[in-house]
Amino acid sequence: MKIAMLTNNYRPFVGGVPISVERQAQELVKLGHQVTVFAPEYGNGDTQEDELLRREMREGDEKSPERVIRYGSRKRKMENGMVYPGLFPSGILDVFEREHFDRIHVHHPMFAGPWALYLGRKYRIPVIYTYHTRYEDYLHYIPCFRVGQDSVAVKRKAVEWIQKKAVPAYMKWFCGQCDLVLAPSAGMEQLLREYGVKTPLAVFPTGLEETFFRKDAARSREIREQYGRGKRYLFAAVSRLEKEKNYGFLLRGIAELKRRMGDDFHVLVIGDGSQKSELKVRASILGIQDMVTFVGNVPNGEVKDYLNASDLFLFASKSETQGIVLAEAMAAGLPVVAVHAVGADDIVEDGVNGFLTEEQEEAWAGKVSETLNEEKYGGMRRAALATAENYRSSRLAIYEEMLYNQCGLKKGDRSYEKEDRRERSAVALR
Image (cartoon, rainbow, N blue to C red; front, side, top):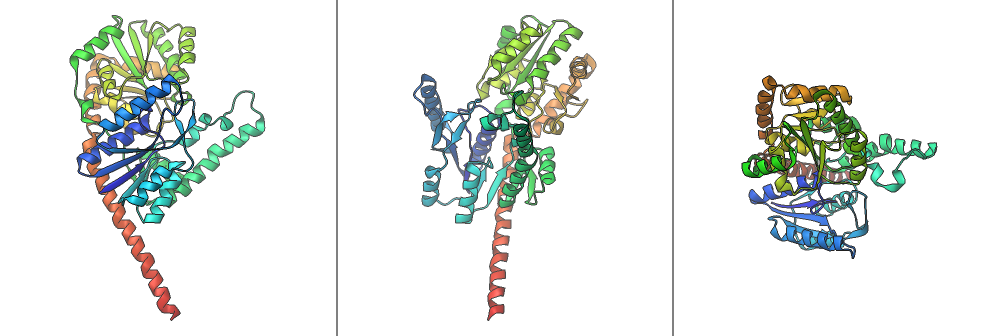
């Protein structure tokens, strides 16, 4: 099967969607399929950083088992490093003119999304869409939708209307044009149904590569010695340092934990983003600057070593559709303490492989402390490992292959019904 995957962001950009697309593509290649990922270019500027991005992009594409075709993007970037794709992706259109694809899998409803629908209609190819992101939670990345304390009431109401009405309406329309919609968790599937989506839906989470289940004990010991600072416990948090990840709450929770437990623990914050400097200042104000290390970005293949060096995974984001990092943490045997939200609720079994709390610092810190209880901790570690087994990419790829096949059959059935109706109409006119 020849599969075209269209995405608005891909490596070297670090984020949940690029990781998901890459893992799906590479696992499908292992099953014998030909996968072409159409992704935007990075490093369009003239700075040294742009040159490094171009080099990293080229090297990654050359080494990867999936074919990657880059289409044009604009020089201007979002604050989190994502690029704005070009409005007319001639590179994609040219390839579709020359080659035949059996399935189109699109990962964004904007930019790449409408082009995927156009190509699906033009070449009669089934279109599959994965609903990775709750876009109403990410409007602040677009300057004109950003609301601050000094924003006028009219703008506040307009943005609120877009979040609550316009975005759900667009998602309902876009999903309705696709042949199959995949949701990364049961909670997200339910949200799409609440939007009124009638297109066939299936739950398909992002999987974990086999490497996440392999431990490098020596490297993990090194990390523990480097960052543990001789403390009894080492905790980890992994995500981009952006507003929607709710790190302000996480830092306040750590301060509360310090009040309860003293300073016999250290926290690694892995990831980078526009809020990094602000979060360091907040940590200092809260008096926990010596208990939190902002590690920065870590290559995907090395994240597991940091997780295996840790005792517990801390999570506060409320904007996740799945939370890939939660499955990654559990593959390292880490219980998770998270805030109740779609995504976290789907993988964390309260009191089994971790705890879920309301967004309340005292309750959250209390569950962190409770997880470390010797009588509970061992059982939670084993439960976390058992949960992670359900997220192996190799298993999920077989399921994805089945969904692709079913989607093709259903598309054929609908095409046949259309032709049959046309023939009946023609006979009636005669």
